[in-house]
Image (cartoon, rainbow over all chains, first blue to last red; front, side, top):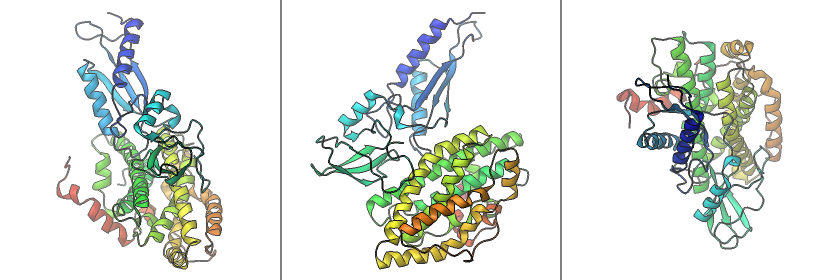
Amino acid sequence: MTIISSDIIDGEVKRIWKLLGEINDPEVPVLSIVDLGIVRAVQITPGITDEFNKPLIKGVVRITPTYSGCPAMDMIRMNINMALLEEGFKNISIETVLSPAWTTGWMSEHGKEKLKSYGIAPPNPKQQVCDTRLFQEEEAIQCPRCRSYHTQMISQFGSTACKALYRCLDCQEPFDYFKCH
Amino acid sequence: MSSYSQAVSLLLHLADNALILGHRNSEWTGHGPVLEQDIAISNIALDLVGQSRNFYQYAAEKINSENPEYKMTEDGLAYFRDAWDFKNCLLVEQTNGDWAKTILRQFLFSNHQYLLYDALMSSKDEQIAAISEKSLKETTYHLRWSSEWVIRLGDGTEESHDRMLNAIADLWKFTGEFFIATNYELAVKKNAIGIDPSALKARWQEKLESVFTEATLPIPAQDAPMLTKASGKTGAHTEALGFILSEMQFLQRAYPGGMW
């Protein structure tokens, strides 16, 4: 029986991560699902061969939703499937995991930069408003257009589950803030 | 339904609470008092329906493993059960009424759901713990939003204050049910899968009193009329649920298994 070497496995795992890094979130198309932090693991089972005794790449991609009701999850799952199939990965399953729960802390710095240039204020590095105390506002949310910190929350709930609605008190433009979670 | 285990009953109770309140809230979509709050209540609806899907999917998995001849799905549980099979609390099925009633219903329920998920994060059942951990983050937002609105309306104008008083008169009696344990809740508490909901009452009351006080709203008296049985949780519902189901289940009943 042929044993797949760990080098091959590492190489394939890297290839899959790279593929996943090219799949964008359907609702925030400037971010890849890897930037967003929803890909939790890529695993390939070592030592499996097919009926011709050739190495078989079999494994699992684990993803986690940003919010329970995120309507993009089905599409993300489909896009992962398509991307894997296009590259010849026929035996990689996709599993959804809920714990530990997704947090904006998992968003990459690269992703935060991309968000900002897209016009969405990225989550603050320090989580400020994540408990039940009332009438809190996050400090220093920067307007992604004029860079002013003179901004105000309009609503904790925005155009998608993961965003809050803000306005800039200097340039007067409303903008989305990727809220801490 | 009697062939299902007690753990499945707990899962259906949690799922039905979330689905029915999510559906009620979704009735506001496109009809909210202002655009931002229309979006907020629709977001809360989406969170709740998402939470219900996680519980239904897990319930279906358990049902199928307990009954190998079954092929239950999340849609099967949401769309093909009748009112007496639903285990949601009566509060969540009550009609939307005005904005004050919707807000108060959300606050009374989120205050409970927050404590419930917080406690269920320690469930011995890993999937129940995981769904609760995930959902708690969302419910934190719902509780904060609805608390702030209770205060804004209660301590607002004479009109908004009066509407909150009417909402309390309409809804208070349903809150007793949260804390009355059903047989299935007590059964799953034994193996540390679930909890006894009566243990949540003191903290629920404490939060309620702090928000009502700030909202200048009267705290209902101990002897105010109150539901004293676990009614909705055991399948005995108000007429409101039937109307929700007839609308929500119509498509799947007319075209079973329809997909798009």
